[in-house]
Image 1 (tube, rainbow, N blue to C red):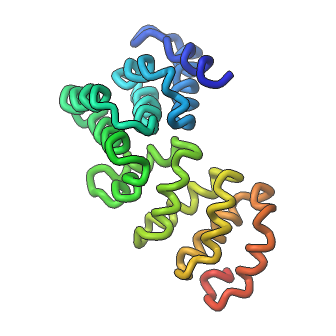
Image 2 (image 1 turned 180 degrees about the vertical axis):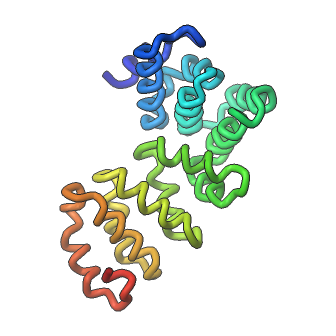
Length: 212
């Protein structure tokens, strides 16, 4: 199914879709959001979707476009136009997508600490699938406070793709990081089976927060 299937389903016609068509367009856009640079063939359709009146569809399009992994000056310029013209409803998503295109995925670890952009940054992380893994790891390692809880929850929801990174974090020098890694693995169920030995080892950790 892959790239071409997602691309085809995005052509729904702004403002004229019936409910099944709207669901199909949203599913296609969210699929692209999880694909990272592999969503490149759908760029034209995603740009159109980013201006859609359906905020969920527009959001998924911005997440997908922000994950393309290239600093395309023309695309960034289009987003700047959107950010100004569309106002706060879409503007924050355009701003976060621009930051990702310009600076790469790890910028999200900084944006979750932003008063104005944190909520949108978390949406990009939550909808980005495996493309969110590196910034989530950075948040667990470097960002203080509550963001660690959210990052651990998202990694737990990600399942198997997050297991290797979480196994490494169980050996981290910071007990808080170790505790969040164990919690994320514990939330996965069967997907965490490759890490059972690591989890059992954490039960002997010197810090009580990790052992719990």
